[in-house]
Image (tube, rainbow, N blue to C red):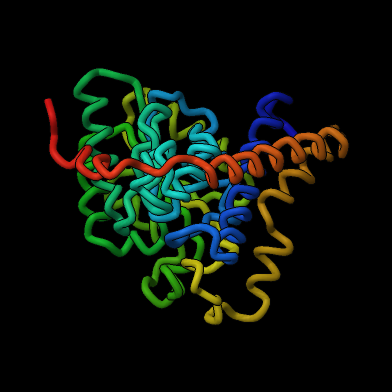
Length: 324
């Protein structure tokens, strides 16, 4: 394949995708068994979106996530141990054990704490982009949102100003077909709710196979280069699918017959990329060894988090007021 990444990058991308998949699977069973507190909104099935978009960013480029942030955060560089500690409410969690599943993040790697309000992160990312521009920096911000957010007022207000001011933000719609449990076709006439509306804001857009990590990465390269050059934002609409429901209590009874078979059994992004790697000369043994390393890492993260210390009572008073 022309333009296929070098071995180190190809394996690195697959490792991140597999790491996200194993982390999410572990979380699922920990919740199912009642071992872990709280709730979850998982990104299983959307690994190619996260890794393809974020793999080539610098650590000082920032990323804004949603209520489904685990894949984005791990792809941006937060360790699975720090993520797992956060899920157990431990002090060593990426947000000190006070964020939980929908508010993970770590500014040190450029992952701002996730925003669980649908469309709430869109204007925040615009503010980050404006700051970069005013400071004369070549940094970019990648902002993820779902198809449902395209019907929020915050989406249209943000796109208007981002296009007008040529902000260095890549707005990434992970179109997984459903807003919670409502089909996107019941809420908007547009086939591509993000990309089809982009022109009215003067923003270029692309529709990309969100389950093809290489296609996503190439689109990311173009959008990042454009933003760094001062040419403004890009809207990327990635067609993807979440394997599980909206949250852990969603049995997905609203999905039509055959849909899950197509997306989960025949169009799984992790399995697709693994097959591509085999076709490009990577051995089964090489990939199996990588997978075993990741699985051991996740197991270690779980055991570590189970025994990690909880925050102190006085920690509840921290970060409540701004202290100069």
